[in-house]
Length: 263
Image (cartoon, rainbow, N blue to C red):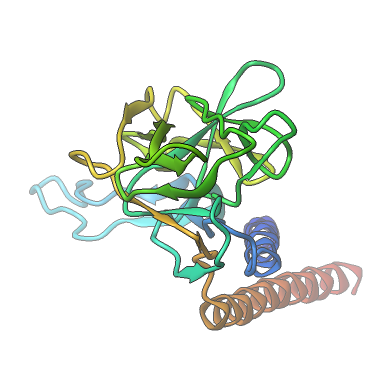
């Protein structure tokens, strides 16, 4: 019976939907996390009678056809790249991006990754790194005797060095943006990597044309709205239940048909 398989596709789709929602809720406090959203499409249709087909030799036509669908499929679990709230941390190496752009990070295998998580620190050599020790590109080195490190909204890093009256420039933090941010691939650890779908990275200084600004001593919170996610979870559960009832109804109909043949 066709309804049995159609409802099964609906249950599988809603199961994936619940998994994505649960991941969003799990990351409600993850710095820089961007929520995911599932996108669905209907499957192929069997046309029993096509619209516009002739019904007589005089040229009369069917105004509306007869066709039956075969269910639903998941086509994407895209990221919603909206801005998260900025929270003050009072840590001088915590950074956030207000607007478009990602921090560049050099991974241990040499690849470049991108992140909105600006919870940075210094390693033993004074290099600006992520919590996993990955170097923040293009590379910022802070001398051990540096005092009062400041990072402007345009990404310029300066610090006071004992014996000098003027702040010393330590480097320039850059951002990267993409034509299609949704096309970035998540690799865990709050990192994304470039794909053919995202297009190549466009690098520039914060505050430049098309780039957001950097905020020192602030971190970007997850853009997950717990109320919205719980509402979506309830809707997904109900959709799953309705599809399971269709399967139960189909089973009962098949059982009734089987009993008729036995009788």
